[in-house]
Length: 330
Ligand code: ADP
Image (cartoon, rainbow, N blue to C red; front, side, top):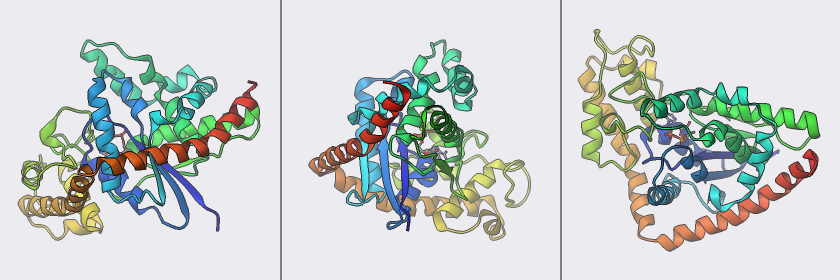
């Protein structure tokens, strides 16, 4: 049977959220153990695309790596590493910038949103925010990746990585595997509990609407119980018209297994739905938090995993990146 190569990453731009966990991390830990060969990465270079504090980025990188392991990734079977420890990402990114166009970068939804936010704050937009998808494409293509498990917000960037791989191969000869994104059926886009029209994003500062992976059970309960619900009667699953309730049903379904629409029939009131959702989230986070505590007590172990992961990743990426340099004429 063919091995499928899987790659995905998380940015250390803030504390990891329930959205990161349900949309990505939990699925990474579930990647089929035998058919897949998988790499998971803390993509710290991507954290420099917006205003950042160096010490905070370093701290959050470490925390994200620890949470990847706490989510159940087995470092004996999986390659877990930090992007900046492997030079190949930046080396390949430049070549992909020479294949991508300014227009396609400017069309990225995330660029438009983040650039507008920076400008709204009176700040300036870093050039790396525009070129970010080229570096992300490099992350993926360097490892001959087939599959990229991500939340819905990242599918457009994976599509761009696909386009760049196809274009490069067409112009310079077959070099890259053409990857595809996979999003989960439920909870592909967990929404902010206080503003269910926007994504639960870790870099937003709107604390009360965001459940963080390391929130204490009492904090989780408080945030879920205070979630904004919609006006209207009854518990109905409708993402367009009743986004607040639909979000809670999706979170509950993702935590307990099941289908959000089917679950909606079991609830007569928003209060009961919130209570069960809060408990389901607390239960899902409990083992992750326990394992995180254990790992924090053993920093040498985490260091060793990341060192070995970077070495392995470097060995895997180098032949493909070297081949790309040759193919493009260097
Ligand atoms: P963020 O947007 O929180 O900064 P990242 O870009 O680091 O997240 O994403 C890490 C992974 O988590 C990606 O696969 C992304 O699609 C997924 N993800 C992020 N936020 C959510 C969300 N609210 N719902 C589902 N998946 C999400």
